Image 1 (spheres, protein in one colour):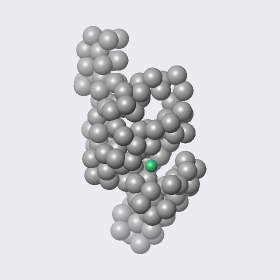
Image 2 (spheres, helix red, strand yellow):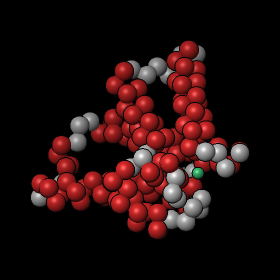
Image 3 (cartoon, helix red, strand yellow):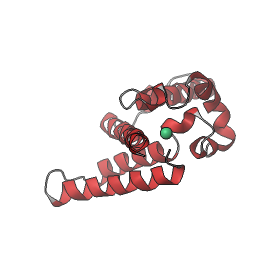
Length: 144
Ligand SMILES: [Zn+2]
């Protein structure tokens, strides 16, 4: 089973290679804001919202004191089972964290943050970055 740093190196190398490949061959040119959005999502998907949140992993420990929020997730999902599903694993994690953010926001401000969402397209690109990072994690788990 590849370790945390192996996953990180693999993810970032693939990300950089894909962005450079798409740009060099004129297949897709990222403008700065979408590149930032997908890069940020990919970073968060690689460092914090990884499939290994289902175990005592380095990613889980990186949440620090906030790891108490991830504890129910860890209890709900057995290691390397549905959390490591390449299709819905990342989406379930995003929904889980979105629910925590929404509830926290509601408790603080007594309203939901819907009217404050910046630009829905960039949010979707950002979430795509998380899902891509999670998919690469599952692929590497399957290879090594
Ligand atoms: Zn894993």
